[in-house]
Image (cartoon, rainbow, N blue to C red; front, side, top):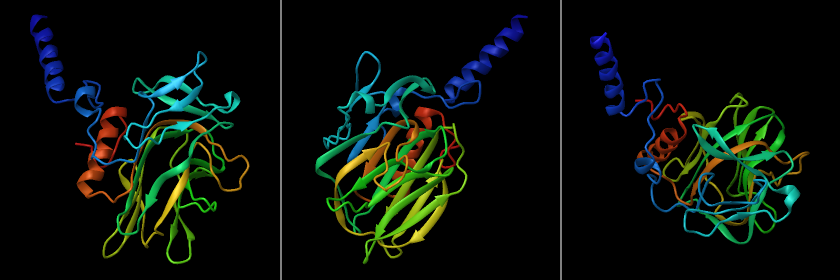
Length: 273
């Protein structure tokens, strides 16, 4: 009996030292991974920090942690999403119920350069399929939409502007699964091929060689699509969004994806070691 207890104790300590939980999930250490992403993000929203709520859990301000001042707000009570605790690996997520959204406007939120690049990462979960429900979107003064990530009949569609005609191109992952948290990466890396990559949980779903339009966005929506659709709002949860106005190296992309994997315990092809 004593030998059995000692063996079990050894197994537990072995897993703990290896950085894993005995149940097979990753071991997340807040002190190690909480801020372990490349410098220079322009938008960084996390549901476990900087969320201002009322007594009912309705979110009026979601503070940007990047230092760029891109806080998203909602001043109308009926349109406010709600903060839900313990939604993913013991951590919070902001719930958009299909009738609410948040935004930042009246400033240059983002500058998109075809020579600098772009990278966006989002941890979210859709509750139901819809028609062009917006997860995040960046919009110009003239209502042109440089970037939109939206849900389209159980597919993910990443829309962006390409030169020289401001034409939309789309990347679609036809089955990403409802009611399951995912890590989605939307990447544009300038260079000889000007590669645009669309990834889900670290796996590349679509690649295209095109050059994006250099422009600036003055509005950002979270939970809403600016495209004419009914309804334009998502029914789902968002736990974290990280955006850069530059292309990231492969090592930096892996760093962000593995940070999100460790934090939220989502299987990620880049990080399963």
